[in-house]
Image 1 (cartoon, rainbow, N blue to C red):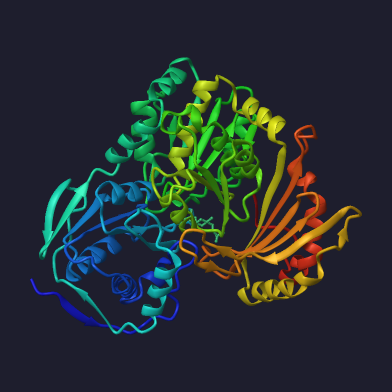
Image 2: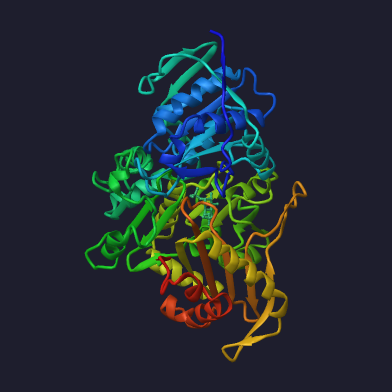
Length: 544
Ligand code: G16
Protein backbone atom coordinates (compact mmCIF):
# COMPACT_ATOMS: atom_id res chain seq x y z
CA UNK A 1 0.00 0.00 0.00
CA UNK A 2 1.46 3.37 -1.03
CA UNK A 3 1.63 6.16 1.53
CA UNK A 4 -0.30 9.28 0.57
CA UNK A 5 1.12 12.76 0.99
CA UNK A 6 -1.56 15.19 2.12
CA UNK A 7 -1.05 18.93 1.87
CA UNK A 8 -1.56 20.94 5.02
CA UNK A 9 -1.00 24.40 6.46
CA UNK A 10 0.83 25.10 9.72
CA UNK A 11 -0.79 26.00 13.05
CA UNK A 12 1.03 28.69 14.99
CA UNK A 13 0.21 27.35 18.47
CA UNK A 14 1.89 23.92 18.52
CA UNK A 15 4.61 24.79 21.03
CA UNK A 16 5.13 21.91 23.48
CA UNK A 17 4.85 22.98 27.13
CA UNK A 18 6.22 21.44 30.33
CA UNK A 19 4.99 18.03 29.19
CA UNK A 20 4.01 17.80 25.53
CA UNK A 21 1.36 19.72 23.62
CA UNK A 22 -1.76 20.19 25.76
CA UNK A 23 -4.80 21.84 24.22
CA UNK A 24 -8.55 21.72 24.39
CA UNK A 25 -10.12 18.82 22.45
CA UNK A 26 -11.85 21.51 20.38
CA UNK A 27 -8.39 22.73 19.30
CA UNK A 28 -7.08 19.23 18.63
CA UNK A 29 -10.12 18.38 16.50
CA UNK A 30 -9.36 21.08 13.93
CA UNK A 31 -8.51 19.67 10.49
CA UNK A 32 -5.01 18.16 10.39
CA UNK A 33 -4.10 19.45 13.87
CA UNK A 34 -3.09 16.00 15.15
CA UNK A 35 -1.60 15.04 11.80
CA UNK A 36 0.59 18.17 11.63
CA UNK A 37 1.93 17.67 15.12
CA UNK A 38 2.73 13.98 14.76
CA UNK A 39 4.34 14.52 11.35
CA UNK A 40 6.39 17.37 12.85
CA UNK A 41 7.59 14.98 15.58
CA UNK A 42 8.62 12.34 13.03
CA UNK A 43 10.27 15.01 10.84
CA UNK A 44 12.40 15.98 13.85
CA UNK A 45 13.69 12.43 14.39
CA UNK A 46 16.22 10.38 12.45
CA UNK A 47 16.87 6.70 11.98
CA UNK A 48 13.51 5.16 12.86
CA UNK A 49 12.87 3.29 9.60
CA UNK A 50 11.79 -0.25 10.43
CA UNK A 51 11.97 0.43 14.19
CA UNK A 52 9.31 0.10 16.89
CA UNK A 53 7.10 2.91 18.18
CA UNK A 54 5.01 2.58 21.35
CA UNK A 55 1.63 4.30 21.42
CA UNK A 56 -0.64 4.55 24.42
CA UNK A 57 -2.80 7.05 26.17
CA UNK A 58 -4.75 7.74 29.31
CA UNK A 59 -8.04 6.74 27.68
CA UNK A 60 -9.50 10.21 27.70
CA UNK A 61 -11.97 11.51 25.12
CA UNK A 62 -10.34 11.66 21.65
CA UNK A 63 -7.67 9.07 22.63
CA UNK A 64 -9.08 6.48 20.22
CA UNK A 65 -9.39 8.95 17.33
CA UNK A 66 -5.85 10.28 17.75
CA UNK A 67 -4.37 6.78 18.09
CA UNK A 68 -5.85 5.61 14.79
CA UNK A 69 -4.38 8.69 13.10
CA UNK A 70 -1.00 8.15 14.79
CA UNK A 71 -0.84 4.51 13.66
CA UNK A 72 -1.50 5.45 10.02
CA UNK A 73 1.07 8.26 10.06
CA UNK A 74 3.65 5.99 11.72
CA UNK A 75 3.11 3.34 9.04
CA UNK A 76 3.34 5.87 6.21
CA UNK A 77 6.57 7.29 7.67
CA UNK A 78 8.27 3.89 7.73
CA UNK A 79 8.11 2.59 11.31
CA UNK A 80 8.36 -1.21 11.28
CA UNK A 81 6.13 -1.88 14.25
CA UNK A 82 3.77 -0.18 16.65
CA UNK A 83 3.11 -1.54 20.13
CA UNK A 84 -0.17 -0.18 21.44
CA UNK A 85 -1.92 -0.79 24.74
CA UNK A 86 -5.24 -2.64 24.59
CA UNK A 87 -8.08 -0.17 24.19
CA UNK A 88 -5.43 2.42 23.39
CA UNK A 89 -4.54 2.54 27.08
CA UNK A 90 -1.13 2.75 28.71
CA UNK A 91 -0.44 4.75 31.83
CA UNK A 92 2.45 7.18 31.30
CA UNK A 93 4.86 5.15 33.49
CA UNK A 94 3.73 1.91 31.82
CA UNK A 95 4.39 3.47 28.40
CA UNK A 96 7.86 4.44 29.60
CA UNK A 97 8.46 0.87 30.75
CA UNK A 98 7.20 -0.66 27.50
CA UNK A 99 9.54 1.60 25.48
CA UNK A 100 12.50 0.48 27.60
CA UNK A 101 11.52 -3.17 27.93
CA UNK A 102 11.01 -3.72 24.19
CA UNK A 103 13.91 -1.39 23.25
CA UNK A 104 11.58 0.68 21.10
CA UNK A 105 12.80 3.71 19.19
CA UNK A 106 10.42 5.93 21.15
CA UNK A 107 6.78 6.43 21.96
CA UNK A 108 3.77 8.69 21.66
CA UNK A 109 2.06 9.23 25.00
CA UNK A 110 -1.42 10.64 24.53
CA UNK A 111 -2.34 12.38 27.72
CA UNK A 112 -3.31 15.66 29.29
CA UNK A 113 -2.44 14.22 32.67
CA UNK A 114 -4.54 15.62 35.50
CA UNK A 115 -6.48 18.06 33.31
CA UNK A 116 -10.23 17.42 32.89
CA UNK A 117 -11.36 15.39 29.86
CA UNK A 118 -14.39 15.14 27.60
CA UNK A 119 -15.41 17.03 24.44
CA UNK A 120 -14.88 20.36 26.20
CA UNK A 121 -11.85 19.15 28.16
CA UNK A 122 -8.18 18.77 27.36
CA UNK A 123 -6.09 16.44 25.24
CA UNK A 124 -2.35 16.09 24.83
CA UNK A 125 0.40 14.40 22.85
CA UNK A 126 3.96 13.92 24.08
CA UNK A 127 6.92 12.24 22.42
CA UNK A 128 9.18 10.05 24.56
CA UNK A 129 12.65 8.98 23.42
CA UNK A 130 14.25 5.54 23.53
CA UNK A 131 15.23 5.81 27.20
CA UNK A 132 11.48 5.93 27.95
CA UNK A 133 11.51 9.55 29.06
CA UNK A 134 10.03 12.76 27.70
CA UNK A 135 11.95 14.23 24.79
CA UNK A 136 14.55 16.77 25.88
CA UNK A 137 14.27 20.42 24.91
CA UNK A 138 16.44 20.10 21.83
CA UNK A 139 13.83 17.76 20.33
CA UNK A 140 10.76 19.69 21.53
CA UNK A 141 12.30 22.90 20.15
CA UNK A 142 12.89 21.18 16.80
CA UNK A 143 9.30 19.88 16.76
CA UNK A 144 7.93 23.37 17.39
CA UNK A 145 10.12 24.83 14.64
CA UNK A 146 8.86 22.16 12.25
CA UNK A 147 5.18 22.78 13.09
CA UNK A 148 5.60 26.37 11.95
CA UNK A 149 6.65 25.43 8.41
CA UNK A 150 5.00 22.07 7.80
CA UNK A 151 3.34 21.76 4.38
CA UNK A 152 2.36 18.08 4.22
CA UNK A 153 2.02 14.87 6.16
CA UNK A 154 2.10 11.20 5.19
CA UNK A 155 -0.65 8.72 5.90
CA UNK A 156 -2.30 5.54 4.59
CA UNK A 157 -5.89 4.91 3.62
CA UNK A 158 -6.76 1.93 5.79
CA UNK A 159 -9.47 0.65 8.08
CA UNK A 160 -9.19 1.34 11.81
CA UNK A 161 -7.14 -1.10 13.90
CA UNK A 162 -9.17 -3.15 16.39
CA UNK A 163 -7.60 -1.76 19.57
CA UNK A 164 -9.41 -4.28 21.76
CA UNK A 165 -7.98 -7.41 20.16
CA UNK A 166 -4.72 -8.51 21.80
CA UNK A 167 -2.33 -9.74 19.10
CA UNK A 168 -0.91 -8.56 15.80
CA UNK A 169 -2.53 -6.84 12.85
CA UNK A 170 -1.04 -5.04 9.85
CA UNK A 171 -1.28 -1.50 8.54
CA UNK A 172 0.44 -1.41 5.17
CA UNK A 173 3.93 -2.83 5.73
CA UNK A 174 3.86 -2.10 9.45
CA UNK A 175 2.94 -4.57 12.20
CA UNK A 176 0.65 -3.34 14.95
CA UNK A 177 0.71 -5.38 18.14
CA UNK A 178 -1.98 -4.73 20.72
CA UNK A 179 -0.56 -5.62 24.15
CA UNK A 180 -1.93 -6.11 27.65
CA UNK A 181 -1.22 -2.73 29.24
CA UNK A 182 -0.84 -4.06 32.78
CA UNK A 183 1.22 -7.28 32.54
CA UNK A 184 4.74 -5.93 31.89
CA UNK A 185 4.30 -3.15 34.42
CA UNK A 186 3.07 -5.55 37.13
CA UNK A 187 6.11 -7.78 36.47
CA UNK A 188 8.42 -4.80 36.92
CA UNK A 189 6.82 -3.79 40.23
CA UNK A 190 7.40 -7.31 41.59
CA UNK A 191 11.13 -6.94 40.97
CA UNK A 192 11.25 -3.74 43.05
CA UNK A 193 9.03 -4.38 46.05
CA UNK A 194 8.55 -7.03 48.71
CA UNK A 195 5.12 -8.25 47.67
CA UNK A 196 5.12 -10.92 50.42
CA UNK A 197 5.62 -8.28 53.11
CA UNK A 198 2.87 -6.08 51.65
CA UNK A 199 0.53 -9.10 51.38
CA UNK A 200 1.26 -9.72 55.06
CA UNK A 201 0.32 -6.14 55.86
CA UNK A 202 -3.11 -6.52 54.24
CA UNK A 203 -3.58 -9.99 55.74
CA UNK A 204 -3.00 -8.42 59.16
CA UNK A 205 -6.02 -6.11 58.69
CA UNK A 206 -4.31 -3.00 57.33
CA UNK A 207 -6.98 -0.96 55.53
CA UNK A 208 -6.35 1.20 52.49
CA UNK A 209 -8.36 3.15 49.97
CA UNK A 210 -6.96 3.88 46.52
CA UNK A 211 -8.80 6.37 44.30
CA UNK A 212 -8.03 5.75 40.63
CA UNK A 213 -10.17 8.83 39.79
CA UNK A 214 -11.96 7.04 36.89
CA UNK A 215 -8.68 7.22 35.04
CA UNK A 216 -5.96 5.01 33.63
CA UNK A 217 -4.58 3.57 36.87
CA UNK A 218 -7.78 1.64 37.63
CA UNK A 219 -6.86 -1.59 35.79
CA UNK A 220 -3.30 -1.43 37.16
CA UNK A 221 -4.46 -0.88 40.74
CA UNK A 222 -7.14 -3.59 40.60
CA UNK A 223 -4.60 -6.10 39.25
CA UNK A 224 -1.76 -5.21 41.60
CA UNK A 225 -3.33 -3.99 44.86
CA UNK A 226 -6.45 -6.18 44.97
CA UNK A 227 -5.06 -9.01 42.82
CA UNK A 228 -1.38 -9.64 43.51
CA UNK A 229 -1.28 -8.02 46.95
CA UNK A 230 -4.56 -9.45 48.21
CA UNK A 231 -6.17 -6.23 49.46
CA UNK A 232 -9.93 -6.68 49.87
CA UNK A 233 -12.14 -5.95 46.86
CA UNK A 234 -13.36 -2.39 47.16
CA UNK A 235 -9.93 -1.10 48.21
CA UNK A 236 -9.65 0.46 44.74
CA UNK A 237 -12.42 2.95 44.05
CA UNK A 238 -13.30 4.71 40.78
CA UNK A 239 -11.26 2.00 39.06
CA UNK A 240 -12.85 1.94 35.62
CA UNK A 241 -11.28 4.39 33.14
CA UNK A 242 -13.83 6.75 31.64
CA UNK A 243 -13.21 9.03 28.63
CA UNK A 244 -14.62 11.92 30.66
CA UNK A 245 -13.30 10.71 34.05
CA UNK A 246 -16.99 10.52 34.93
CA UNK A 247 -17.02 14.30 34.66
CA UNK A 248 -14.43 14.47 37.44
CA UNK A 249 -11.14 16.32 37.59
CA UNK A 250 -8.43 13.63 37.73
CA UNK A 251 -5.98 15.65 39.79
CA UNK A 252 -5.01 13.88 43.01
CA UNK A 253 -4.80 16.88 45.29
CA UNK A 254 -6.61 17.99 48.43
CA UNK A 255 -9.26 19.79 46.41
CA UNK A 256 -10.35 16.89 44.21
CA UNK A 257 -9.66 14.19 46.82
CA UNK A 258 -11.21 16.13 49.69
CA UNK A 259 -13.63 13.36 50.63
CA UNK A 260 -10.80 10.85 50.91
CA UNK A 261 -8.76 13.28 52.95
CA UNK A 262 -11.65 13.91 55.31
CA UNK A 263 -12.26 10.16 55.70
CA UNK A 264 -8.60 9.60 56.62
CA UNK A 265 -8.94 12.23 59.34
CA UNK A 266 -11.68 10.25 61.15
CA UNK A 267 -11.11 7.44 63.69
CA UNK A 268 -13.11 4.96 61.59
CA UNK A 269 -11.24 5.83 58.37
CA UNK A 270 -8.68 3.45 56.81
CA UNK A 271 -4.98 3.42 57.69
CA UNK A 272 -3.78 4.68 54.33
CA UNK A 273 -5.23 6.61 51.40
CA UNK A 274 -3.71 7.16 47.99
CA UNK A 275 -4.71 8.37 44.55
CA UNK A 276 -3.22 8.89 41.14
CA UNK A 277 -4.07 11.16 38.23
CA UNK A 278 -5.46 10.92 34.70
CA UNK A 279 -2.39 9.23 33.21
CA UNK A 280 -1.11 7.52 36.35
CA UNK A 281 2.13 9.41 36.91
CA UNK A 282 1.12 11.53 39.91
CA UNK A 283 0.32 10.35 43.42
CA UNK A 284 -1.35 11.54 46.58
CA UNK A 285 -0.40 10.01 49.92
CA UNK A 286 -2.49 10.41 53.08
CA UNK A 287 -2.05 8.44 56.27
CA UNK A 288 -4.54 8.37 59.10
CA UNK A 289 -4.49 11.93 60.44
CA UNK A 290 -1.53 12.84 58.24
CA UNK A 291 -1.40 14.32 54.74
CA UNK A 292 2.10 13.93 53.31
CA UNK A 293 3.16 16.78 51.02
CA UNK A 294 4.76 15.62 47.77
CA UNK A 295 8.01 17.32 48.80
CA UNK A 296 8.04 15.47 52.13
CA UNK A 297 7.06 12.25 50.40
CA UNK A 298 10.12 12.52 48.15
CA UNK A 299 12.37 13.00 51.19
CA UNK A 300 10.73 10.14 53.09
CA UNK A 301 10.87 7.73 50.17
CA UNK A 302 14.53 8.55 49.57
CA UNK A 303 15.38 8.09 53.25
CA UNK A 304 13.59 4.72 53.43
CA UNK A 305 14.05 3.30 49.92
CA UNK A 306 16.66 0.79 51.13
CA UNK A 307 13.81 -1.07 52.88
CA UNK A 308 12.52 -2.21 49.46
CA UNK A 309 14.41 -4.99 47.64
CA UNK A 310 14.89 -2.93 44.46
CA UNK A 311 16.84 -0.27 46.37
CA UNK A 312 18.47 -2.31 49.14
CA UNK A 313 21.96 -1.41 47.93
CA UNK A 314 21.15 2.26 48.54
CA UNK A 315 20.48 5.13 46.17
CA UNK A 316 23.06 6.96 44.08
CA UNK A 317 21.52 10.40 44.38
CA UNK A 318 18.31 12.43 44.48
CA UNK A 319 16.97 15.06 42.09
CA UNK A 320 14.10 17.46 42.64
CA UNK A 321 12.58 20.23 40.59
CA UNK A 322 13.59 23.70 41.71
CA UNK A 323 10.22 24.68 43.28
CA UNK A 324 10.11 21.43 45.29
CA UNK A 325 11.02 21.93 48.95
CA UNK A 326 14.56 21.27 50.14
CA UNK A 327 13.41 18.44 52.46
CA UNK A 328 15.11 15.86 50.21
CA UNK A 329 18.36 17.86 50.24
CA UNK A 330 18.73 17.12 53.93
CA UNK A 331 18.33 13.40 53.30
CA UNK A 332 20.95 13.50 50.53
CA UNK A 333 23.31 15.36 52.81
CA UNK A 334 22.95 12.78 55.56
CA UNK A 335 23.36 9.88 53.13
CA UNK A 336 26.36 11.60 51.55
CA UNK A 337 24.92 11.27 48.04
CA UNK A 338 24.47 13.65 45.10
CA UNK A 339 21.57 16.13 45.12
CA UNK A 340 20.38 17.93 41.99
CA UNK A 341 17.97 20.81 41.50
CA UNK A 342 16.43 20.91 38.01
CA UNK A 343 13.78 22.99 36.26
CA UNK A 344 10.14 21.89 36.44
CA UNK A 345 9.48 19.05 33.99
CA UNK A 346 10.32 15.38 34.32
CA UNK A 347 12.37 15.57 31.11
CA UNK A 348 15.17 17.28 33.06
CA UNK A 349 15.73 14.15 35.20
CA UNK A 350 16.40 11.90 32.19
CA UNK A 351 20.11 12.63 31.76
CA UNK A 352 20.84 12.31 35.49
CA UNK A 353 19.03 8.96 35.64
CA UNK A 354 20.69 7.66 32.46
CA UNK A 355 24.11 8.66 33.81
CA UNK A 356 23.42 6.78 37.07
CA UNK A 357 23.90 9.95 39.10
CA UNK A 358 20.48 9.82 40.74
CA UNK A 359 18.11 6.98 41.63
CA UNK A 360 15.07 8.81 43.00
CA UNK A 361 13.47 11.98 41.64
CA UNK A 362 10.49 14.01 42.70
CA UNK A 363 8.49 17.15 42.28
CA UNK A 364 6.16 19.25 44.36
CA UNK A 365 3.52 18.66 41.68
CA UNK A 366 2.78 15.22 43.16
CA UNK A 367 5.29 13.26 41.12
CA UNK A 368 7.87 10.80 42.40
CA UNK A 369 9.76 8.09 40.57
CA UNK A 370 13.01 6.24 40.21
CA UNK A 371 15.40 4.82 37.68
CA UNK A 372 13.00 1.90 36.97
CA UNK A 373 11.40 4.04 34.23
CA UNK A 374 11.94 7.57 32.93
CA UNK A 375 8.60 9.06 34.00
CA UNK A 376 7.19 9.77 37.39
CA UNK A 377 5.11 6.87 38.59
CA UNK A 378 2.05 7.18 40.81
CA UNK A 379 1.54 3.51 41.63
CA UNK A 380 5.27 3.00 42.20
CA UNK A 381 5.18 5.68 44.92
CA UNK A 382 2.16 4.03 46.53
CA UNK A 383 3.83 0.60 46.47
CA UNK A 384 7.07 1.96 47.93
CA UNK A 385 5.07 3.56 50.72
CA UNK A 386 3.28 0.23 51.35
CA UNK A 387 6.64 -1.58 51.39
CA UNK A 388 8.01 0.89 53.93
CA UNK A 389 4.88 0.63 56.10
CA UNK A 390 5.08 -3.18 55.97
CA UNK A 391 8.72 -3.21 57.09
CA UNK A 392 8.64 -0.42 59.67
CA UNK A 393 5.31 -1.51 61.17
CA UNK A 394 4.52 2.09 62.09
CA UNK A 395 1.79 4.45 60.95
CA UNK A 396 2.38 7.09 58.27
CA UNK A 397 2.01 9.76 60.94
CA UNK A 398 4.69 8.18 63.16
CA UNK A 399 7.08 7.83 60.25
CA UNK A 400 6.58 11.46 59.17
CA UNK A 401 7.06 12.81 62.70
CA UNK A 402 10.21 10.77 63.22
CA UNK A 403 11.53 12.09 59.93
CA UNK A 404 11.00 15.70 61.02
CA UNK A 405 12.66 15.00 64.36
CA UNK A 406 15.71 13.77 62.47
CA UNK A 407 15.89 16.22 59.58
CA UNK A 408 13.69 19.15 60.58
CA UNK A 409 10.48 20.16 58.79
CA UNK A 410 10.13 22.15 55.58
CA UNK A 411 6.72 23.78 55.86
CA UNK A 412 5.54 24.03 52.29
CA UNK A 413 2.56 25.17 50.23
CA UNK A 414 1.74 26.12 46.65
CA UNK A 415 -0.83 28.76 45.74
CA UNK A 416 -2.17 28.58 42.17
CA UNK A 417 -3.97 31.38 40.37
CA UNK A 418 -5.56 29.65 37.38
CA UNK A 419 -6.84 31.10 34.10
CA UNK A 420 -5.30 34.50 34.72
CA UNK A 421 -5.11 36.80 31.70
CA UNK A 422 -1.82 35.84 29.99
CA UNK A 423 -0.80 39.46 29.39
CA UNK A 424 -1.29 40.37 33.04
CA UNK A 425 0.63 37.29 34.20
CA UNK A 426 3.56 37.97 31.86
CA UNK A 427 3.77 41.61 32.95
CA UNK A 428 3.71 40.54 36.60
CA UNK A 429 6.64 38.19 36.02
CA UNK A 430 8.59 40.73 33.96
CA UNK A 431 8.23 43.47 36.58
CA UNK A 432 9.14 41.04 39.34
CA UNK A 433 12.27 39.99 37.43
CA UNK A 434 13.24 43.64 37.09
CA UNK A 435 13.11 44.05 40.88
CA UNK A 436 15.36 41.08 41.64
CA UNK A 437 18.74 42.85 41.61
CA UNK A 438 17.51 45.29 44.29
CA UNK A 439 16.31 42.62 46.73
CA UNK A 440 19.39 40.93 48.27
CA UNK A 441 20.09 42.36 51.73
CA UNK A 442 16.57 43.77 52.19
CA UNK A 443 14.76 42.76 55.38
CA UNK A 444 11.05 41.91 55.43
CA UNK A 445 8.77 41.22 58.41
CA UNK A 446 11.52 42.36 60.83
CA UNK A 447 13.78 39.34 60.49
CA UNK A 448 13.52 37.85 57.00
CA UNK A 449 16.58 39.01 55.11
CA UNK A 450 16.84 38.28 51.39
CA UNK A 451 19.97 36.20 50.73
CA UNK A 452 19.53 35.86 46.97
CA UNK A 453 16.99 36.71 44.27
CA UNK A 454 17.30 35.33 40.76
CA UNK A 455 15.60 33.70 37.80
CA UNK A 456 16.66 30.06 37.91
CA UNK A 457 19.09 28.84 35.25
CA UNK A 458 19.90 25.14 35.01
CA UNK A 459 23.18 23.81 33.70
CA UNK A 460 22.75 20.13 32.89
CA UNK A 461 25.88 18.45 34.31
CA UNK A 462 25.58 15.54 31.88
CA UNK A 463 25.15 17.15 28.45
CA UNK A 464 26.20 20.71 29.32
CA UNK A 465 22.95 22.29 28.06
CA UNK A 466 21.57 25.40 29.71
CA UNK A 467 17.91 26.21 30.43
CA UNK A 468 17.23 29.75 31.60
CA UNK A 469 14.23 31.68 32.96
CA UNK A 470 12.90 28.66 34.85
CA UNK A 471 11.30 30.56 37.73
CA UNK A 472 11.92 33.47 40.06
CA UNK A 473 13.53 32.49 43.38
CA UNK A 474 13.72 34.72 46.41
CA UNK A 475 15.71 33.03 49.14
CA UNK A 476 16.05 34.24 52.73
CA UNK A 477 18.90 33.91 55.17
CA UNK A 478 16.97 31.42 57.36
CA UNK A 479 16.41 29.03 54.45
CA UNK A 480 12.88 30.26 53.68
CA UNK A 481 12.03 30.67 50.03
CA UNK A 482 9.45 32.16 47.69
CA UNK A 483 9.29 30.92 44.10
CA UNK A 484 7.04 32.27 41.35
CA UNK A 485 6.63 30.86 37.87
CA UNK A 486 4.02 30.42 35.18
CA UNK A 487 2.78 26.88 34.62
CA UNK A 488 3.61 25.18 31.33
CA UNK A 489 0.68 22.75 31.40
CA UNK A 490 -2.43 24.94 31.46
CA UNK A 491 -4.56 25.30 28.35
CA UNK A 492 -6.47 28.51 29.05
CA UNK A 493 -4.81 31.85 29.91
CA UNK A 494 -1.93 31.59 32.35
CA UNK A 495 -1.59 29.80 35.68
CA UNK A 496 0.58 31.63 38.17
CA UNK A 497 2.17 29.34 40.73
CA UNK A 498 3.52 30.73 44.01
CA UNK A 499 5.60 28.23 46.02
CA UNK A 500 6.34 29.00 49.67
CA UNK A 501 8.72 27.23 52.00
CA UNK A 502 10.08 27.70 55.50
CA UNK A 503 12.49 25.46 57.37
CA UNK A 504 12.01 24.53 61.01
CA UNK A 505 14.98 22.74 62.60
CA UNK A 506 14.85 19.20 64.01
CA UNK A 507 14.30 20.52 67.54
CA UNK A 508 11.79 23.16 66.43
CA UNK A 509 7.98 23.22 66.27
CA UNK A 510 6.58 20.74 63.79
CA UNK A 511 2.89 20.99 64.65
CA UNK A 512 1.98 24.39 63.23
CA UNK A 513 -0.76 24.85 60.66
CA UNK A 514 1.03 25.09 57.31
CA UNK A 515 -0.75 28.20 56.03
CA UNK A 516 -0.20 29.98 59.35
CA UNK A 517 3.45 28.95 59.45
CA UNK A 518 3.90 30.46 55.99
CA UNK A 519 1.77 33.58 56.50
CA UNK A 520 4.71 36.03 56.61
CA UNK A 521 6.07 34.65 53.33
CA UNK A 522 2.63 34.75 51.72
CA UNK A 523 2.50 38.44 52.66
CA UNK A 524 5.95 39.16 51.22
CA UNK A 525 5.07 37.41 47.94
CA UNK A 526 1.99 39.61 47.65
CA UNK A 527 3.99 42.72 48.51
CA UNK A 528 6.59 41.96 45.82
CA UNK A 529 4.35 40.67 43.04
CA UNK A 530 1.06 42.51 43.65
CA UNK A 531 -0.94 39.46 42.62
CA UNK A 532 -4.28 40.54 44.05
CA UNK A 533 -4.17 44.05 42.62
CA UNK A 534 -3.05 42.88 39.18
CA UNK A 535 -5.33 39.88 38.76
CA UNK A 536 -8.33 41.06 40.76
CA UNK A 537 -8.25 37.71 42.61
CA UNK A 538 -8.77 37.81 46.33
CA UNK A 539 -7.47 34.29 46.89
CA UNK A 540 -5.72 31.46 45.02
CA UNK A 541 -7.84 29.11 42.88
CA UNK A 542 -6.13 26.10 44.44
CA UNK A 543 -3.99 25.74 47.55
CA UNK A 544 -1.95 22.56 47.86
C1 G16 B 1 3.93 17.82 34.21
C2 G16 B 1 5.42 17.59 34.22
C3 G16 B 1 5.96 17.79 35.60
C4 G16 B 1 5.57 19.16 36.14
C5 G16 B 1 4.07 19.32 36.07
C6 G16 B 1 3.63 20.71 36.45
O1 G16 B 1 3.29 16.85 34.97
O2 G16 B 1 5.72 16.27 33.79
O3 G16 B 1 7.34 17.65 35.55
O4 G16 B 1 6.00 19.32 37.45
O5 G16 B 1 3.64 19.09 34.75
O6 G16 B 1 4.14 21.61 35.52
P1 G16 B 1 3.67 23.11 35.49
O7 G16 B 1 3.98 23.65 36.85
O8 G16 B 1 4.47 23.72 34.37
O9 G16 B 1 2.19 23.12 35.24
P2 G16 B 1 1.98 16.13 34.45
O10 G16 B 1 1.58 15.21 35.56
O11 G16 B 1 1.00 17.25 34.20
O12 G16 B 1 2.39 15.44 33.20
